[in-house]
Length: 395
Image (cartoon, rainbow, N blue to C red; front, side, top):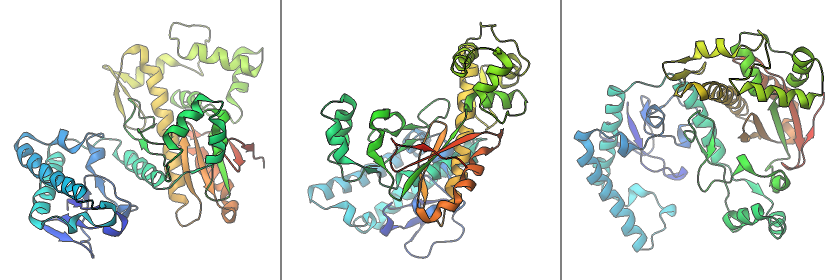
């Protein structure tokens, strides 16, 4: 049954479905709605927001429903404006208690009809399940306040331009969150939305302002994720050692690890380069399989339009990102019922905000993260009392 959540505040959860308002006991057959609400977490709900790849409801509205939807939305917005003019704090009341039932019914019925039209007239994405699990993970992350050391940030801003920008945007905020955009990049790699704390690009010198809400951060990071993705797509077994050291010994047979790393990446994304000749890394065969008719097709069900020049880059970046997020999603579910939680994810790693009483699960977290759909990816584990002071954890 298609339904709409009428207010997203925790204490105001109510839904509209099948012409009825439900405030307490919800029908068991609820199955499809527009987007996420934390009360729907861990329920098998289909979200049309994911179905249409992040477009908004107005953009997906069919022509025959546009006038009805626009007029009903305009009426709802008029109610909001009147509340503001009357100095009503909408965060303190349930929205649906202030609006006549007939206006609510008209608005939410239109939303239901748009969702039904989407279901009947468009194809569900082949990677929907992955999008669904990732959507729930990033919504869980965005619901938890970041613990930012404002005193340190204030001191840093005297000498650092990036710190000045952070202070300007977040210094006076009481509640700071990481809010990811699931559809912010063409490859599917997560970005952060405007207004979010920019966790993806905080410079190293400022990372110590980010602290756990529990006892420590645990960071689990893949070793050379994109190269391991290339190995997997080549049909090869994953080396159970550092990839750059493996390449130094088996490809170059000379020089340092860092030199091997530089030389490999210089070859990898330069399709004209022939400096590496190896059956172990077969770029051409991979592209023949995954780049067809102007699109790359990834193992995680993505179909991304791109030219030949960008094909390998898009394929590796998209597949690596989805492979990592698949593991982050698994860890997020694993931590349900514990005091610990996923704090955020940055590129090819996950950072867990760990409670001391959950310390015995660290080996399991590492095992879950490494056991990917593309094979066993080696990882490293670091621990610290803030994000800027993380030390390698050895067994």
